[in-house]
Amino acid sequence: MDRRSLTLAPPTLAADDLGFFRWGRVAGKVLLTNDAGEHAFLSEQEFDDLLAGRIGEGHGRFDEFQRKGFVRDGWDLDAFATRVAKRNRHVRRGPHLHVLCLTQRGTNPAGAPNAAGQGDDDMSRETGEQIVELALQTMSPTVTFEFRAVAGEPLLNLDVLRHTVEFARARNRQAAGKTLRFRLFTNLSAMTEETAEWLIANDVHVTVSLDGPAGLHDRIRAWKGGIQHADVVRWIEYFGRRYAELGRDAAAWHIEALLTVTRETLSAGREVIDEYVARGLRVIHLQPLNRLRVDADTWARVGYGVEEYLDFYRGALAYMLDLNRRGVQLSERLASIILVKMLTGDDPGVVDLQSPCGSGTGEIAYGVDGRVFPSDEARAVSAMGEPMFDLGDVRALSLVGIVRHPTVRAIAGASLLDLQPMCADCWNKPFCGYSPIRNFISQGDLVGQRPRCFECKEHMAVSTQLFELLANEADSATAEILKRWTLTAPDLADAHASQEAP
Image 1 (cartoon, rainbow, N blue to C red):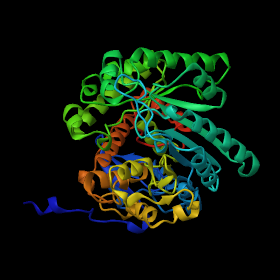
Image 2: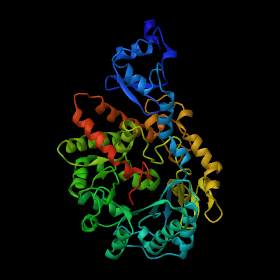
Image 3: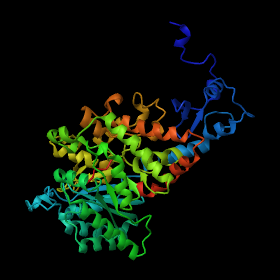
Image 4: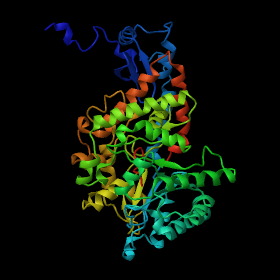
């Protein structure tokens, strides 16, 4: 073997001239990134020159590299530190996303509500009030209350949903003075016009399940529960019409939809996207099926491997960009989150795409009985009989006690990318993040192994595809589309990178 093929560094390395960066090869170029979220594409010769200290004042790219912190000569360290702090402000923000599981009653495959169970199947008004009191202790200037169910439909406990919204507004006016947001995830099986009008009048954002065109959607709902495609379309149109009649800004007030991706969906990517366009939806969230929510027999019918999913995603994203070039306004949610990190120098505040992960420090979830968990996925793990993520009862906890809980600290430590093998040196580190709870589900421990981590592969694939597009200097139109997708950032705040369709 030629000894030169083993060389791992250039003959000369001007280490004292360089700022800290990570690097990799994307689209035939060398990609540099750093902790401020800056990036640059270099030719191989430029990379050699940078490492050897030959890019100094007077070089065509010196000003760029100096501004971004890739070289030390004239580097404004204070400005760089400010940019790093801005991207990491979530560590001092406090819990801002509070997920309430309102009921354990679901819907049957025909979409009708199941018969009422025992009294403890539903969250009580008193528990809802206790959650509000706890949530408003946060330092965060904004607080989002997200209403869900264990399975099926949170509107089956409409009384507590309404009371919690009204109580939160009253308590906030009296003492907290925060900006409140309310978000309902519904499969629409219990929706009525009276309920819809109350949601609109009380500024509750609505997210529904739309799994694609009629045939595909109705087959998925046959095992997952919820209403038929025609009724989903009717409610999407209803809310859209009412928002317009009330003069609401369409950019802020519109129905959001979530997609359940099954094995059948993988071969119908274009049809699914066309359905979202036909319904006037502005965002589609492509995400893999959550194995935690699917039993083994169902997974054998509808599940798939990571590479199958990533092939589907790449094709779907390419098709969406082609539609955008033709004037269609539709963005992909995960891509938009990552693009905000890549192109704006900011972080959109998505709790499970941060380092450290926001479980317990940015997000808190509550069971129907008032038990507290660091995230809704942690609550689902507990429901399966594993209590390791249980933090206690809302009636006995303070917000400080939750944030400082040993379990929450363990999650934060396990998700700090700077400490993890492979993550610490990865060029995608500034744009990535993972959930230790999902690692526990899939690998049996909080940290897991990166080569076996679905999230790692998914995020790397998405970031690589986006950077390949941005690296093409001849295609400015696509670059402008991707920049426009970052404008959806207000819709991404206080949310999850992975959201399960109701």
